[in-house]
Amino acid sequence: MSDRAANRRKRQADKRQGWTDGLTADRLGQFGIGVVLTLLVLAALGPVVSPYDPAEQDLSNRLESPSLSHPFGTDQLGRDVLTRLLHGARFSLGIAVAVTTVRLLVGTAVGLVAGYAGGWVDEALMRLVDTLLAFPGIVLALVIAGILGPSLVNVMLALAVVGWASYARLVRSSVLSLREREFVTTARLLGRSRMHIATRHLLPNVVAPVVVLATLDIGSVILGTAGLSFLGLGAQPPTPEWGTMLASGRNYLRQAWWLVNAPGLCIMVTVLGFNLLGDSLRDMLSPTQTAQMEEL
Amino acid sequence: MNGQELCKRLLTMAIVLLGVSLLTYGLIFITPGDPARTILTQQMGGQIPSQEAVEQFRAENGLDDPFLVQYAHWMGDVLQGDLGHSYYNDRSVSEMIIQRLPNTIALAVASIFVALVIAIPAGIASARNPGSQADYAAQIGSLIGVSMPNFWLGYLLIIVCSLRLNLFPVAGAAGLEHLILPSLTLGSGMAAVIARLVRTAMLDVLDDAYIQAARAKGLRERIIIYKHALRNALVPVVTIIGLQLSYVLNGAVVIEVVFQRPGLGTLLVDAIFARDYPVVQGVTLLIGVIFVLMNFAVDLTYSRLDPRIDLGGDPT
Image (cartoon, rainbow over all chains, first blue to last red; front, side, top):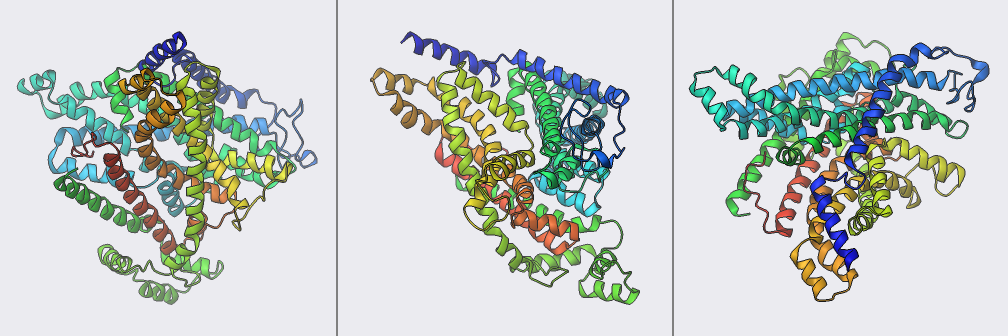
C-alpha cells in the first residue's frame, strides 16, 4: 500500500516535470549540451588534426577493418572513414544550422505578419501554411529537391521551404494572445507605428519559444538532410556527407559492416544531442509556452 | 461537433486540398531548363533532340499553354481518375499507382501494428512504476529510437538478421517474410514516439478519481490497468497515430528503397530520378490527399471517442 502511495506521489511529481522526469531532465540536458559542444569542437578541429586527407585514395588498403591506424576502417577506395566522418560533421552541422535559421526567420516573419495584420492577409498566409503542412515533410522536400536537381544546395532549399510553416503557426498563435495584452494596447494608444509594435513589443516575446522549437527542429533537419542524401539527392560522392557515405556503404554490407554503421552512429548521436538539448530548453520555458509548443 | 462546425471543417479541408493540387501541379514549373528538352534527351538516351521534336512534344503534352489552363486541364482529368501517362512507357499513372499501392499499405499497416505492440506495453510498464529500471530502459530506448535514422536501422537489421543469421530475405516484396524487417524498422521508430505518449497519458489517467475508486473497490490491478485506465489513455494515442501517418509515409519512401520493395515510395524516387513528371505529380498528389483525409478522419474519431473534446474552435 505504501508502495502504491509512493508511486502515486512520484507520478504526480513526474507529470509536473514533463517527460524527461526520473532521469532528471538536467542531467540529460547536460549530456545533450556535452554532445553538441564535442561535435562542434570535432568539426572545427578534426579535419586539422586528422593525419589523412578525406579524398586520399589508397587502393591497396581497400575495405580494411577498424584498426589502430584506421579506427573506423577504410572504405571501398581505401579512404580513412574517421577522417571522412570528421569532415562530414562540418556538413551536417553547417547545413542543419543554416536550414533551421532560414526556417526560423521566414516562419517568424510570416507568423508576425499574419497574427498582427489579421483579416485576409492572415487567412491567405495560414491557408498556405496548412497546404505545406498537408504533406509529409520529407516527401515534399524529396519532390522539390528532385525536380530542382540533385545537389546539396537544392536539398537545403527544399528542406527550408517545407519547414517554416510550423514556426509561422507558433508565432502567430503567440502574437494573437499577445496583441490584446496591456503593454501592446498602451503602445498602440501612444501612437506607435505597427512596425514599432511588431518588432519592439511582439517579437521579443516570441523569441524564447521559437528558439526552443528551432533546437528541437535541428535534429529533424539533420535526419532529413541525411535521408535525402541517402536517396541520392543531396551531396554527391566523393563529398564526405554522412547520408551519402551510408548510401555508398550499402553495397558492402557483407564485407565491411562499418561503412554503414559508422555514419549511422554519427547521425544518431548528433540528433540525440540536439533533441536532449531541445527537451531541456523546453522544460525551462514557462508551462503556458510549453503547452503552446505541444500543440505543434 | 454540430453540423455548422462540420461544414466549416469541410470547407477548410476543401481549400487545403485545392492548395495541395495547385502546389503539386506547380512543382514541375520550378524545374531548371526546359522540361520538354530534358525529357526528350533522357528518352533518346542522351542525344540532343531536334527543335521540331521538342516543339511536337510540347504541343502533344500541352506544355505551351499558360499555367492555369494546363492546371485546369490536368485537374479535370484528375477528377475523372485520370492522372496522365508516364513519359517513358506510356502506361497510365493510376495503373502504376494501383499496382504499387498494396505493398505500401501492407507496410504501413504492419508498421503501425509493430509500433503498438511495442509501445503500449512499454508505456504502461513505464507509467506503473515511474523511476524503476523498466521505466528508464523504456525512456532511453525511446530517446534512441527517435534519434535514429530509420535507413540505418534497416541496414542494421539486414546485417544481423539476413546476412549473419539468415532469418529473412534481404530485399523484395514477395511474401510475408519480406514484410517483417521493413515493418520492424519503420514500426520501432514510431514506437519510440508512441511509447512516450502512452506513458504520459497513463500517468494522467492513473491519478484520476475513478481509478482510485476502482482500487478502493478492490478490483485486481490488471483489470484496473487494462480495462479502466488504458481505454482512456488511448484517446490521445489515437490522434498521435493519425499524426504518425506523416512518419509512416516519409519513412515508407526511405524504407522501400532500403529493402528494394516495389511500392509508392520506390515509384516516386525512381520517377524523380527519371524526371517522369506525370508519375511524380500523381504520387505526390495521392500522398497529399491521403494525408489530408486521414487527418480529418482522426479529428472526427477523436471527438467521437471523447465527447468532451470540442473541435469548434479555430483549427489553426
